[in-house]
Picture (cartoon, rainbow, N blue to C red):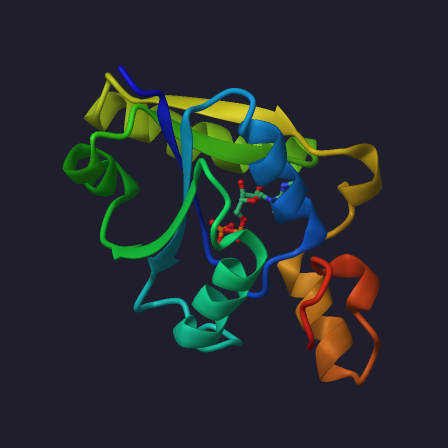
Length: 152
Ligand code: ADP
């Protein structure tokens, strides 16, 4: 059976931290589905189309990576797509607490899906989409924080 993982997120915008988790996960799974969760309550900074285009630009054509969007619960997406693993990145203990809650609720709702965490690379421990957005809002240069070739 194929080992399929989903890496769900807002990617608003994608950062080098996200990119690193996705690439490192390729040695663990046959397929990594990078999925932008459409959350109607969470207003995004960048349009969904734009976020999707960036993901396609970075990973398009890479064997083992699929890009998509979904709405609703991540576990329902897993059920529909026959995904066995939810992949998440951990930067800090705050991430751990947040992820523990979601991961354990997901486990109660869909026990056959395992949440798998990768510790982020040390150089990305302080990098977040929200800080990147703040820098952009204030006219700073974010080139070194987002994947190669992404123009913001
Ligand atoms: P969400 O809106 O679900 O928090 P994000 O797009 O912010 O989605 O993040 C998706 C995943 O990427 C989460 O598991 C998050 O912990 C992880 N992540 C975010 N930033 C980094 C980083 N700098 N290094 C490693 N993982 C990260």
